Figure 1 (cartoon, rainbow, N blue to C red):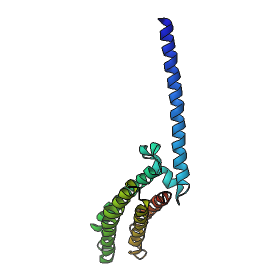
Figure 2 (cartoon, rainbow, N blue to C red):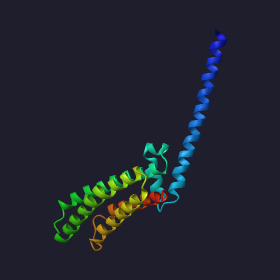
Figure 3 (cartoon, one colour):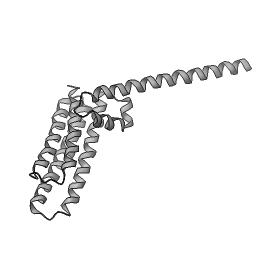
Figure 4 (cartoon, rainbow, N blue to C red):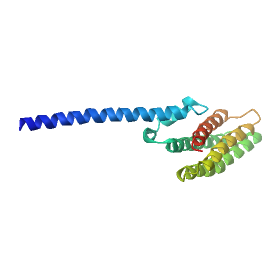
Length: 177
């Protein structure tokens, strides 16, 4: 009986060691995919930090990584829209208010309700060309928002963030074309 217990114990320990080495190897491969993917984007550090902050990236393929970045784009655009709405309640200048309203329209009707859903659907259905077009469009809308202020934008940091995330997302999507 002791021999059987000893054999089972050795077997269990061996399985634990074997499985943990397999998990370490998988994690290494996943990190490698993320790193290799991010090296092909215009902002490596943004790409790495965005993807590694999502636990799903550990098991994602390139399409999964693109979907994660589309979600990051949605979050970043939504935060910007919240800032726009906050500024609208505190900025008395009609010129700036007009630019903010235009930005709110671009962010809500352009990025959040059009570009992001189109990208998600296109990636999910295996048609990355539409996701490429939509992520590029999101970057352009952030740039247009910024330009609407003629150099006096209260949204420069937000627009730059959205533009950067959209460019990284687009670069990952292009890997699928």
